[in-house]
Image 1: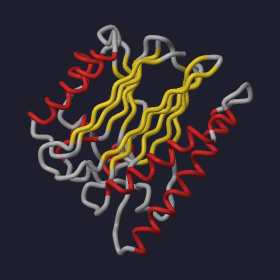
Image 2 (image 1 turned 180 degrees about the horizontal axis):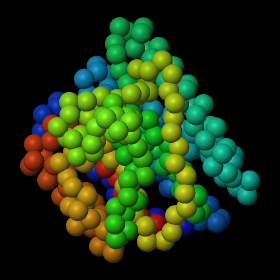
Image 3 (image 1 turned 60 degrees about the vertical axis):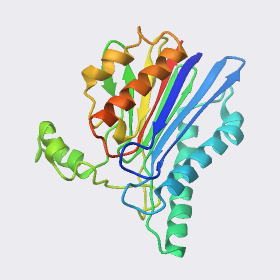
Length: 255
């Protein structure tokens, strides 16, 4: 596989610092390119959220550079990556949590990370950042780990009521502020022409899926300049609609 990509992050209209962090790395191999995309949202109401998100991004970046090459050959499997990622997340949860305890701070971060190797797709999820697949339709691949989403699954809340519920952004867990973290994994196969989007919650609160498709459907994203402009236009639309959070998104198109 090969990829086109674009990223964009904005502090937004209300906050003084951008607590979102992101990482996009693409490496060439004899059999094609491998792509790692990661977005993290430092907890908005928690002090030093930007430190938590940046710390986790650095850990995944180092993993891509140092550990992935050891398993990326003919013996590659998603199971090996899942084992390494689970250990990495556990370790970072302890590191960030210990830093907070030692400095009398409360800090944490969400995580959505995606790896594409050949036609293998692997996503790990903690919190409420999201991953989507976009073709001529948009499909949410991850599930929010929030109180509101839990209540929807239990049948005590309807999906259409989420936006009116004050618990829509209350997380069930995050890295650094939870005693233990239970990572959720999504696996699948990718095909040329598909577009993958990762974003923090600030990018999606004010934008409908129909509006996403209006700018991000795969046949419109013919080069990286168009991909970048589409992200910028959507971020500016979010700001125009008075989104208060930091706003971050990235696109990865399989070619």
